[in-house]
Length: 322
Ligand code: GYE
Image 1 (cartoon, helix red, strand yellow):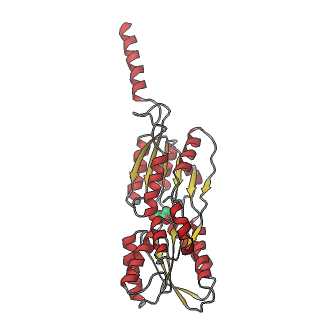
Image 2: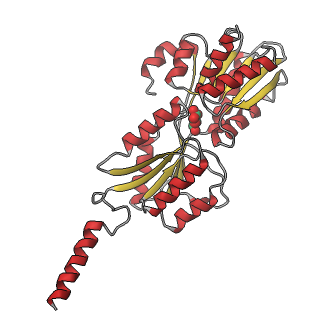
Image 3: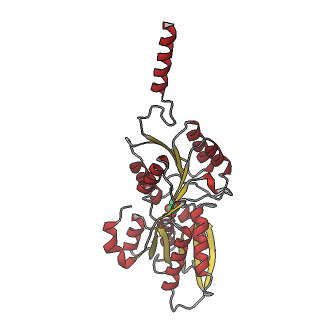
């Protein structure tokens, strides 16, 4: 009889120490365990986004399991599966591409782990596979870039030759920015998009692809639209090496509004940047809190953003937070 009691007491203690609740393994009581799968470290935007997420999902309130996918979907799927196996409370991730998530998201749903999409969207037939999506309106960013080009080209005769550096193939920001840009620009017959190719959102690729564009077009490019600032900064180098003046011979607009873009505008080499705010951490933390507390959350949280040109640099640069 005594032996039975001792055994029962040991079992109860073991369960308490091991944490029988979800996400409890080695976590403090009440702490929310979050598995976050990041795209990679491809751009200045991404670096700022990672810092913001890590700062907002900090101990003691949160226990963050952070995983860097190095721009590969297979790595993200592996990370999500590992979060599910560890029974985290909430999964948050920034999907590198839009398609191919149905199976793993269903696995999360079957395990009753809510998923928050941050920054980039997915294409799934069943919207109940994620709880909410927080991020920018990339189509609108593309439209803003085109509106800037139209404004900048007022009174100029056609043909105006445009080159486009696309983001990562199949990613939501590349698909949507392209869509919004063409929706507005293609309505004006003066513009000819002579080259459009991916530079994978990196400086190195942006430079490499711009070099190829310039060679193929015999340097005859009037406008460059880059889906992010990093690719524009890489392209600026290529343009200079080709003996041309970026910002003058080729008018340039890109997206993000990172520090590097403001520096390039200050130097007169970039003409405009469309803001895309990477500081999603605090809003993401609030959504996760609400989900954990069983509160309803909006399906979509959109981030408000502006447009900046060279004449605003002096006033804006000291205020930039990323
Ligand atoms: O614009 C780019 C980054 O998904 C909004 O990804 C993000 C994009 C951002 O690599 O710089």
